[in-house]
Amino acid sequence: MEATKLGYDIVNSQGIVVKHVEREKTADELAAAKVAANKAAADRRVAEQRARDDEQLLSNYPQEDDLKRAQQQQMDMLNQQIKSSEVSLRNQEQSLAELLDRAAEAERTGKEFPPEQAKQLAVMRKKVDVQKAAVAKQEADRTEASSHFDDEVAHYRELKARIAETRK
Image (tube, rainbow, N blue to C red):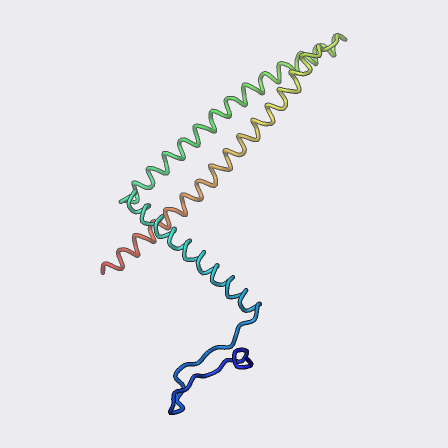
């Protein structure tokens, strides 16, 4: 079976090559071909999904102003969430400040700070830290959304330009 390892030609009765049979692929070549086929299939799926997403974008927003209006509504919602979180943070910081004042007063007067209030103080500090992190996350989300919206508008314009170009 040396021929299958090297490849061979099939010839007709006149000696003319009618078909070439490639050599057997090595295990590494087969593995590489499988990886390449899987990547090609994944790339095709991504391209198909992108085409569906583009179609939906154009369908949902016939005009750029429609897209911008929807984005502004989302941005307004994010801003409202941040404001709400900031109000909550201020309230928690106020409660923490009051507890700290009580602790400082107890220390100044030489009185023992009640253990329950010490626990409250620790809990309130943790709540304030968690709320600060939540506000920071929401602000980061807003920044990311703004960047995404800019990219989405640019992509929308490219799609519209491509459509206009194909209609010429």
